[in-house]
Image 1 (cartoon, rainbow, N blue to C red):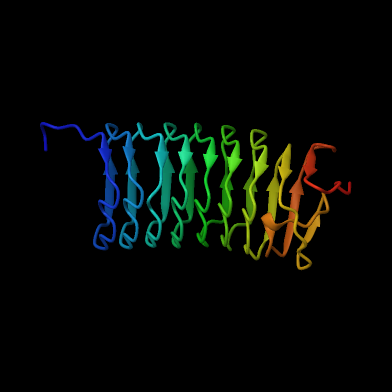
Image 2: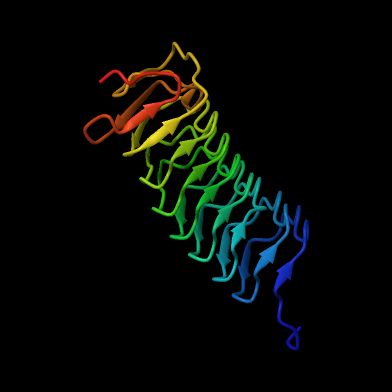
Length: 212
């Protein structure tokens, strides 16, 4: 309606609109509700305005191939892109501080992720079962990774980081870890995890002493 400016979109508004193929969210929209585009399996193109501060609700958008998260976004919500099985490209804006639980879980098409320096926390199972993910850059700003962040990724994962606390130690006899040597539920299911690090002792593993 031309005489109105849309500033918010409620929950479930477009849920299960399987014929919806593209959406443009204008700059006027500041918030939208949970599950707003859930199960929009035909959605291939999303343009997000520059006013949203949090994003979510694209779970099971199985045809979505790429997403650009603008600099206005501070939080990537829980299950934001859960099971977006065709998603291959994610650009994360420079204001995101939190990637919440299961944000990108079950996105097997993702091969690499670069996190901006603004990110401080990565939630539980945020990248669970991203079976194509082979590299991720974790900036100095990230101080902790929650449990099962990379659970069941079944790949050789290269983690680039400087200072990090890994929590929830767990014995994973199927994985090999290189510098530091550790077993951790955050990476359970991976065949190997290689940490690309500066000189020690900048990485601390909760409950364990790094084997340099």
